[in-house]
Image 1 (tube, one colour):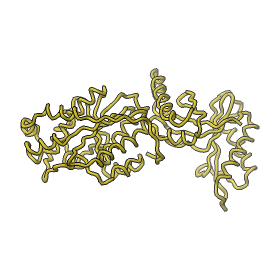
Image 2 (spheres, one colour):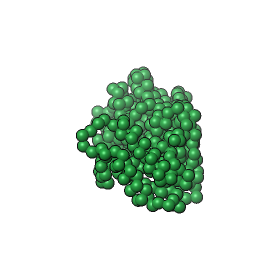
Image 3 (cartoon, one colour):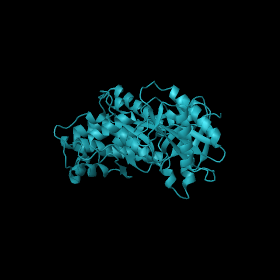
Image 4 (cartoon, one colour):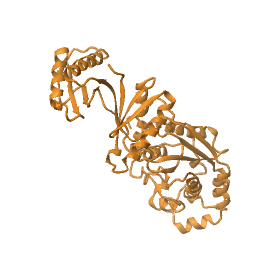
Length: 403
């Protein structure tokens, strides 16, 4: 019997036309980058999927790749002969090993066989292969019973030209597109729940995400910064390389506190963040900014305030959470795995000098008059001069990949 392999099926890449090869090559590069720290794996490109062989642990490879943007689903498969008698014998052996790993039960185990004939010249149709294997499995294992609608065990077989593949399940991936196929964007990453989810969603749309955090030391402690590093370290499992910029923001906030109307502080903070982000976007050749706004969730996220904040952005601002409620965002953060980090009780810079009554309908002329009191260019230059830059490779930690 041949060595097991991992089948990685692609998602939206299958919808591409003449440029499909470009998307598949990017996916191949990402897979190799994520597996390289864990052993020597061989990757074979096929139509709308890859086969992964070798390495020290294919189950570990499956755990890593199941969270990779662009993956529709994957299966740990056993290559076997495709001649029907040999295939049936291999299926009996395969199911025997599966049943041996299950706890004993009193009631029969409902199962079905699904067959897919990738090699169309194969002498039996898919339904005939499934019927033959199902009958032989029933004869070999009296504890099984056929149930086509609600099986607890699904034995799946693919028929290829010179072999067949047996596998039990298709583990779902996040879908979407391979990171890097859509260019780059800068995510304004706080230590909260929303912005990490926004970054993840845009990675599944093919964007490589660069992270920008604003830290208000000494008003905000170093634990807040470490929390952001933990978030980026976690999110780095979704893309081959990640970069985090941390900008000193206390001088900006102090100037706004001292010189500008209290009610406009939050809007002015965010306008200054965009100005710094513009420089990072040019440095990283990024085509957009990403933020975690959800319309109406907090005072700064009303339409007038969103408009006032976006005015200072020189590239499009992507807001993938804008139509989601807080409960939905929290649910996504739990599934992605960022939630336990985000809820650590360390405040971010946005909590500093919070207005008692924030303006919810900021008018641009009032905002412009407030900013005339500030040395905007000098404050932005100070942020850029104090940047801290950290790069992360593709990290991996056990997580629930059910997002």
